[in-house]
Image (cartoon, rainbow, N blue to C red; front, side, top):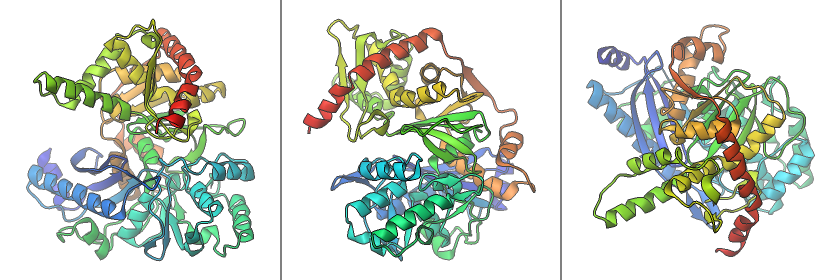
Length: 530
């Protein structure tokens, strides 16, 4: 196996996917059959500066270079050869946000998806378009900047997302994969482009306020999976690999968001399929066979990387609070003279949750580190509360941790259930599903649908991005993305499936009754705990 992979690396027949996630930048190299061959990663964190969640462009550059350098070192260590070229590559990143440029100058610090500062704009645009515009979308950030009277807006020559920015730096091309583009501005899935009617509506609105640019002048060009999106330039190669080992000329596929790469990584791009990505944030993507009956503020309408309509439930908070409590237990054990890594502690929390009371025993927990629009919160304060007669055991504490991580998502999933959205399979991926069984059982109870986790679930978005890069090069004429993934990547792929347990589902519903009833306490914490 290694000899075959080594030969593929030497001959430039591998594919590279890089994803800039919320807490980690990861690069994955795959062989021609999609099997991961090497990886490298860089840990980073957003900064809260002047009321804005952000990352600096310097941190983006440094993180990219570090992740790639570690990938290249992994290749050298495993196969004894340098990584000089690949057959194709692609860039992915956390979706949405606001990166406005004048030429090559960033006009304001990067405003990420985590910010909940665009409520007025989102509401106005939702009413204007009769289409739900979430706060984190790029158009909401642009419109809020206009409403705020921010001087930079008139100078914008290009507006993009993190994935689009990195792709631009590597190729010089101002393009965007349709899945990522659908988190910037509404998409017309028949024309596979931004919705022209809504573009004209917004251009008229901007002109009334004195802005001379048109949306299509400042937004990237929309491309679908499989289309050519430029090649790695000399400057791009040096940006990624300052050592000069990586050669320019590598074709890139359209840049995508982490939602699109998650769909590819779980083979959930066909109608009646869905996936849940659960890590720092959590989102569910369900590929629709028919439109929803009306507009829901809790449901975003986006697309697959191939442009199919998708109902998306996105929540800003997921595993952060579980990780924070694992740190508390790690410190407690250290006081007892025991050095235990965070991994075993997390495993213990997930395992203990399986034996907790089905409803959590009277404890409620809010994991809101940041605002959560699905729950109607513009800011967050992690909060743990219990009734005086609660059964406050470690197992129940663990169970409500897992429930809390999925609670906001469940609010949106319940809407899709009421809409009778057909769902043949739901696949989970991300850190929440690394421990056996527990995360799957909780999600199955929340969605009231079977949940599968594949062997490759831990590979996640960077692997999905590498698959999209491979599809752009390997696909046969007329071959759809779903056909390619089914026949070439996932044929014979093993998966563990857990069906919803009626008692788990009833217990989660009981927890949610307490959760929704006590939301005013969480709002009070936001108002008064500063």
